[in-house]
Image 1 (cartoon, helix red, strand yellow):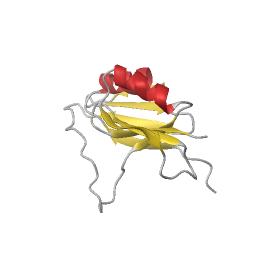
Image 2 (tube, helix red, strand yellow):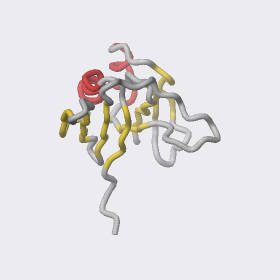
Image 3 (cartoon, rainbow, N blue to C red):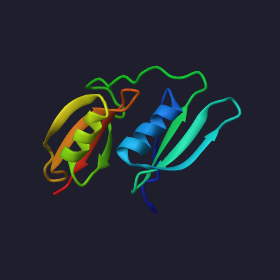
Image 4 (tube, one colour):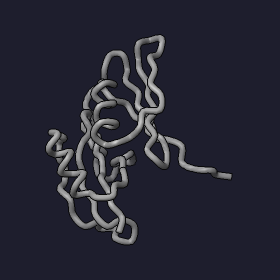
Length: 131
């Protein structure tokens, strides 16, 4: 029987930069960070209702590419905030790349307001707010 959502994993190019973004700007809590024998690094972040795992290969990684329409894949990561406008403004002032400014959610049955930004590797991050 299913107990809960555990984590989603992704690759990043620079662990320090990603820790700064996900902890310092987004607000996740670093749960574990360690270096592997081959020089790669792995980290787990507590996101409140599950974990985010990031893996940074020793040789770096190329910038993320958006999943083309009609192609299976992960489109974005969504984090829930009390106030999307405030969070968006704070991230924008910090120089985070903006994809889409705050607006009312299309799926109003689930969310009230959303905005989209990109992490340091170009991965789409959805900022969401419920009523």
